[in-house]
Length: 128
Image: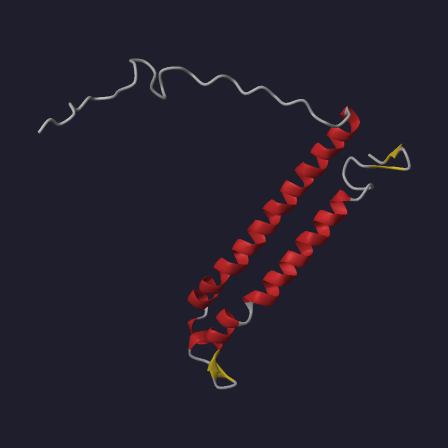
């Protein structure tokens, strides 16, 4: 029985992923005129700043529950409406607060996108 001969397949030397540096990515030309591009950058920066605050508030909210139980261990033993207060805090308190945080973020993001937002113009006049 003749078996086909096994052949090792390899890439030519120096063609690996680190053999040649990646070319610098060209900066894409913007599709907006310069004034509108500056306005878009200002809105994006403001929205990223708002997103950072929203994430920080959400982290404080979600990480604050275990810290609350650590600072006040009596909450896990106290009962209200037949349930431990600790369970009620974990099960019910975060969700309305997260919804309020989402609403706050959405309203702020929409406000930033209005024509009179950061770097915006309204009726052709600059409000900066």
